[in-house]
Amino acid sequence: MPDQNLTLAFDGAVATLTLARPEKLNPIDWSTVKELRAAVARIGAHKGVRIAIVTGAGRAFSAGGDLARYIELFKSPAETQGFLDAFNDLLREIERSPVIYLAAVNGACVAGGLELMLACDLAVAAYEAKIGCGHVNFGVLPGAGGSQRLPRAIGTFRAKHFMLTGRLVDGREAERIGLVNEAVPLNQLMDAARTLASTMAEKSPAGLRTMKRLVNAGIEMPLETALRFEIDTVHAYLTTHPDAMEGLVAFRDKRRPQFRPE
Image (cartoon, rainbow, N blue to C red; front, side, top):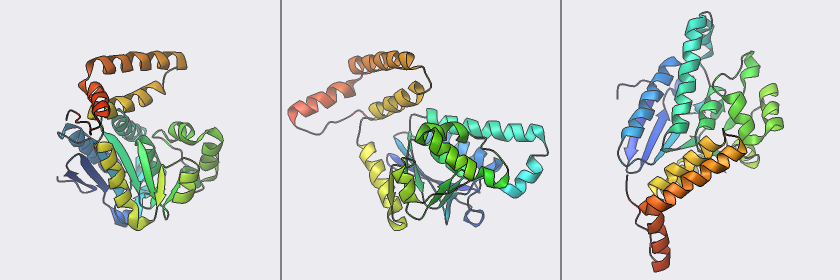
């Protein structure tokens, strides 16, 4: 890949996407967003990939936007709108992808970095990570879903505390409040992420994909509509997809299920 802001590697069912401008703390700028969108498309098109680990090189997952460049960007309403739309489109593509996205938060994860993490399905953080919204510290606002996804992740009061104070928390605190799934020492982070990815990769590909869609689509619906959506989706899956029967037969026969690859 000719990318300058990231690297992408494939290993069986797992892809690893690394933001790779450590000297700038892996900023989220327009060129990075374009490269990330291309990488997400490549991951989705790569046969057999079920899990994508997203992480950062150096001391940061991503410390957010390149504030120096924003000075010029914000002078152009049209350019600013284009960037906001592109960044939001990227995060929606991650959420709508059939691939499970796992954030491995190695360091600073602030502003746009937090918004990227929140669009992932799961997150593991290093104890040493510093995670928060941070926009208010610079007089700006979250423009890629931070004000909407953060309350859904940790509740309104906690989200407002993050957004209105600019506070950052370490990995342990992030795990305690449910902002990440697990916190580990930095030197164990990628092993923990790969172990979690391997665990999920053993499951039914169709089951993973459908489970993600149930949660991500249903949470945007009124409860009654979401419950109907669940019934209809699960009914179709259980009665038509061979993995459902394979799982039950394997349990009966006391063997490991052999799920259909996709």
